[in-house]
Amino acid sequence: MQVAAGSRSGAEHLNGIANVTTFNVDATDEAAVAKFVAQAEALGPVTCAVFNAGAFSTPASILEMPAADFERSWRINALGAFHFGQSVARVMEPRGAGTIIFTGATASTRGGARFAAFAASKNAARALAQSMARELGPRGIHVAHTIIDGGIQMPSYGPPQQPDARLEPDSIAAAYLILHEQHRSCWTMELDMRPYCEKF
Image (cartoon, rainbow, N blue to C red; front, side):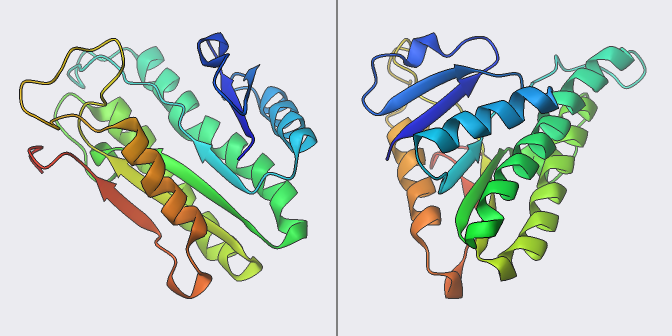
């Protein structure tokens, strides 16, 4: 696949990867997201789109959490997902085909003490994905939500204490590709991924 990758902080770290064209984009900016999707379309029709932006707020008591922290989490995790999902759906709908995947977390399904901002915003993104799936599925667009629970193995990290105790990026990508290639008679709407040793 030809990949268009966007990042708010700059996608230069992805430069040099085969078939990846990078763009700077802020998911909370509606016009910037629309521009990014148009740039991706210029590379070739967008067939699979993944919303992977996220903001993880510092855990805080609901009694002390600054409203600004809650709003920041909501703007990136929920509003950003809306901007992305809407812009991508607008280019896919006329073609009657495509896959949109929203990356979530265990917090997408339940709240936790001191995680109100993160859980509320991730729950919102999950509800958005469900609503889009019900509306766009009959139009040929597969909308799925994924739950990723656990640390992700990055090149800069050393080996985990236990073998395979972190999610391998290539394995996540393989799972996403399976979602994209599924026949519409058997679409997965939500996929939960975690290392074998992760508690749930």
